[in-house]
Image 1 (cartoon, rainbow, N blue to C red):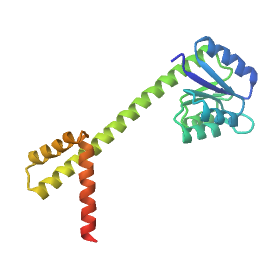
Image 2: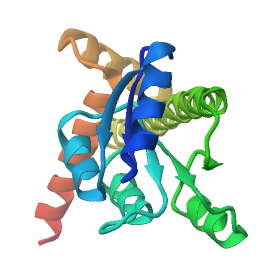
Image 3: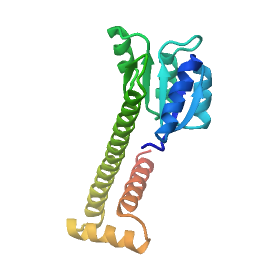
Image 4: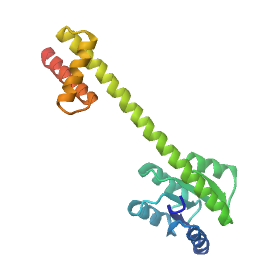
Amino acid sequence: MSNAKVLLVDDDRLILSVLVASLKDVGYEVETASSGEAAIGLCQHVTPDLVVLDMRMSGMDGVEVARWIRTHTDIPFIFLSAYGEEELVTKAVTEGAMGYLIKPVDPPQLHAMIHAALERNREYRLLREKEAQLTQALSGDRAISTAIGILISRECLSEQEAFERLRRCARDSHRKLGEVAKELVETAEKLNRICLS
C-alpha cells in the first residue's frame, strides 16, 4: 500500500508541503492540488488511489469535489478539516468519505488513516467484483434454464437430453454454455415476436 498514489488537496500550501514530505518519507507517490478545480483536473488525468481533501477551501470546497469524485470515479477519499462539528462529520459520511481527520494532522495518524482507507477500498472493490460475477452467473443460469425449457418444448427432449444438446452446441462452437443459451433464448423471443405480429 505504501507505494500507492495519493492526491492531497488543500489551499494551505504550508500544510501541503508538510504532508507531502511525510507521505513521501513512507513511500507514497504524492500529487497535490491547491483548489477543488485543480483536484478534479488531476483526477481526470492522474487517477490517484486515494484523495485527501480539505473540507473547506475557497472556490469549490471539498464537499463539492467529493461529490464530483463519487459521481464520476471510483476513487476513495478522506476529509481533513479544522472543524470537528458533528454536522460536518455527518456530511462527510453522507458524501461517502472513508475517513475524517481534524487539523492539525499528526503525520503518523494520517498514514494510518490512508492505509486503512486504501485497505477498506480494496475490500469493497473485491466485494463488488464478486457481486458482479454472481449476478452474471445467475443471469447465465437463468438463460440456461430457459434454453433447456425451449428445447424440451420444441424438440420433445428430456431435461437431460436438452442440457446435453445445449452443452454439445457450446463445445462444438468453442463458446460458453451461457452465451449459447442466451443466443437461443433471444432467437426464440425474436421468432415469437415475428409469429405474433
